[in-house]
Image (cartoon, one colour):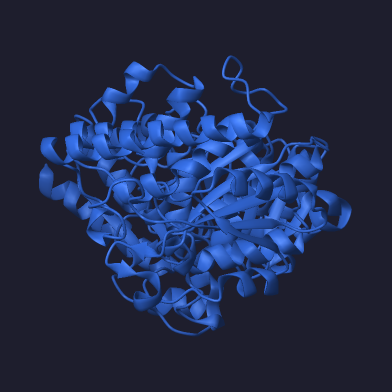
Length: 316
Length: 274
């Protein structure tokens, strides 16, 4: 059995690592047990603020704290944080250039049985559209823990997306996480799969299957959606001429769109095969069932890679 | 009679804020006169009597913090800040123009403004965050937040009212510019917010009701507010929208409309005659 842990577990550990700085403060909207920010709260109660179920107030209070030199991390479920406080994030955080770190857990269909209300599939699109905002989607608990330190060192607004269920551990403690960097997790010359969050593990499974069929697909972890590692993207796009994206998010506005935009801006244009939630709400179910029904599982990535390679043949 | 003299001066400054506000709005061809004129005394007493700040050192640690939550009342705010020396008076002509530090709604691009506002309902929460930071660092500053009365219809204001009380933020002093009107008419007709004092008290605040155009009442209210400990404080300042200009007073259509040259001339003459 490979080791697994929930991405959100890395958040709790990551906060403890930066807690030495007395300016670090943490806020949560009554989901501190779920987001794991409670680990900080139990150790540093004087710097931990329970804001009740009022996300808008929490985000603006975080902005106020940041305006006075504090380094706030504010967390909740991604759905509530992003959707209920979008205007607050727009005006009080991003336009005001406040050093606020927003952390949304339980994102995507991986949230499972709670259903579409809680399965946040628009957060990457919404947060990415905000000027001044950094958007991170780490892919395992270790990378998340490292991302917290990177967020702490970055001065300015940022959003980090996390998920609920355990996913395989991909990194060890030697991993160096940088905002703006993508990470190759598997080499391959026939196609390149750019994935984020839970979909990195799913893409690795697909790459193994493809290899057994003689197709070598690279898997690149685009854990930094904004800024995007355009250099790494273009390098693999040029090498493979077959680009696939994979994300547990709406097909509109997420990682796939970011990759398309970056390719469009470059001199090197090619179509992108996007594995993502189609323009629909999902339903209650087990994460793996939902991934299968809504087109996010290994076999969908395999098909997307084959489509990308097929289009490559048409262009020759 | 130190206070007497000072009160007269504060009233004069309030009228200067009114004049400059209308000149700015007329020049820009847009802006919000009604709510700038209604809070002229509040701004005058805050910037020239109550708040501690140093315009040569805007980041001075001991400064009181200020949030203009009704972020559209920038003509009044900018006029007060220019008068106080946050930036040159000559810069007021750039209000709402391209490349200006004086944006249509309050922003961090104006020297001394600590947070962007303009989407109503957010400023009290921001002020609470500033107050929490002050408590964490054992700093003695107070946080002053000017709220519009129509703004109180935003649910977030009451989330913030609850948070300030929960965290016993006695360094928060909110001022409600209770002019009774919003863009489309009287607050009580469109969406009632009364009984306002009872509401704040029920949320655990100390509420003080005063005449918001009487500078002595404002000064006394602030003197009292800073002394009350253990809970946040709100000054409900009863005002008149468009105060000082007869044809603007109590007329909701002057919420967000620029006076033309002739109207400006009449308005300035009325304010000067006051």
